[in-house]
Image 1 (cartoon, helix red, strand yellow):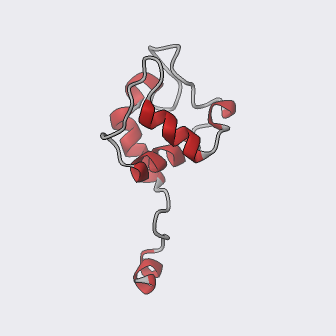
Image 2 (cartoon, one colour; image 1 turned 90 degrees about the vertical axis):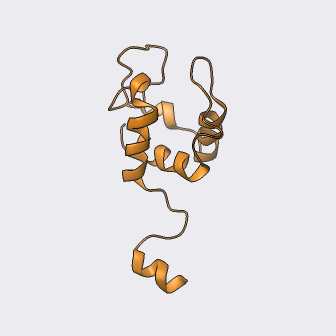
Length: 94
């Protein structure tokens, strides 16, 4: 198994920024903007601002799973690994 993972070039569980970008475009961009700047919902988090992502991945993951305010929770919609992929993508926006 380890040899197969080495051939694939990524450790098991590593976040995938490309997949995260695709998931973000599908589930998040309408409210948060294609590049992280909310176009329509000013109360939505602006991911271009570094301080918006200064929490550990697991805290951000829980926020996405549970939702907050107008943001729906993604528990049961996205798996944890998919949310971690989105978080990895978000960290490229600032």
